[in-house]
Image (tube, rainbow, N blue to C red; front, top):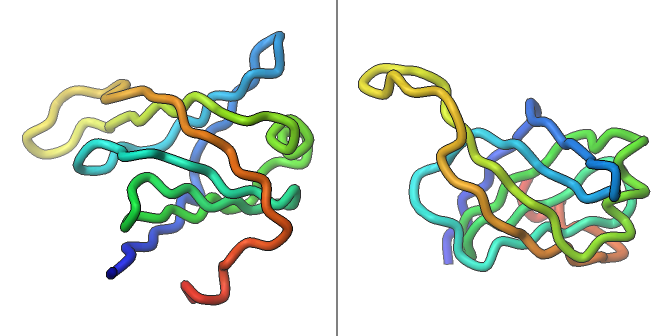
Length: 111
């Protein structure tokens, strides 16, 4: 299997009053399939959008890390910017991604 790896350095994570998290990421082609975030409690996470598409989420904010460390799922909203033949800006799709807590992220194999 050939895994496509991207790094998402510019994204937002929002928390509501109940400490539920919303990840806002740029839209990718295709629909997610069994999306899952791997998180080890530190400052990076791996987002498996599909089995062969992985997104490295760089620099999880220190205020957000404890919230992510205690949740089993997050809401993900993918948005698009106006460009070329797409004049629309806004949410393209939203879905729930499970969060799997791990002791170590497999980052070395993707560098």
